[in-house]
Image 1 (cartoon, each protein chain N blue to C red):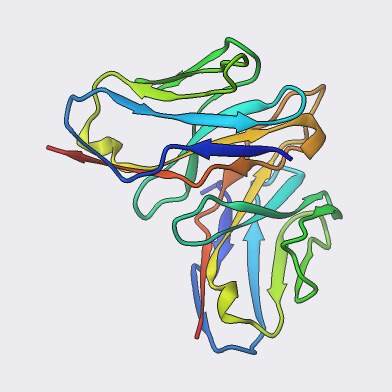
Image 2 (cartoon, one colour; image 1 turned 135 degrees about the horizontal axis):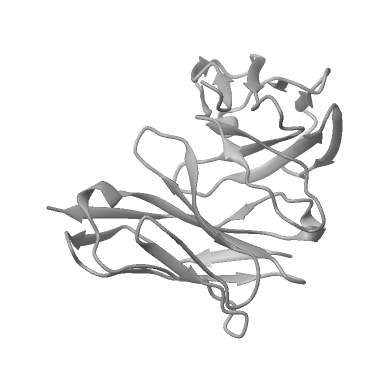
Length: 113
Length: 117
């Protein structure tokens, strides 16, 4: 079945550091890939998405590229801020799954000033 | 506020009691989803509706769980004879229908946190 595996946390970085959170997936067909973010005390929000191979999703300085050959969708940001502290979820959906989202287990990110 | 709303935000109950949660989706969205999120895990799909029709249920949804969307607008999720293992965050999401293979974004509500004592 379809699944998502992401880097375990927590991840603690200093402000302005480079961020990578690894994500790999298993899916039949051609899934759409997502990163969701959950800030403290808030609901899940879509951060970025990519719907086909080699697409790059980007938002708020975050980027992720859909790599079909390595079945990966790693999240990167060049210079993190304290306000980026949150839990990040890699996720996928596929046409065969009626758009239900399959989430990874989440990575908690803490940024030190 | 035109986002997805859920009520209550928190519910504490004793084992064996029944609980019901409500979700109000974004008004023009005809798809509605329920997910469950336990501590330290990502959300897991429970069920979804297109209009009033319940089209898919996860095997996570035991016979103690029932969801309805009677008029294709708000939805309720009921858990009968609650167990401590039911303690989790219950999330609702809504979206426009999927067209021509294009995934439409699901917008999530703030969730209902259930604690079963």
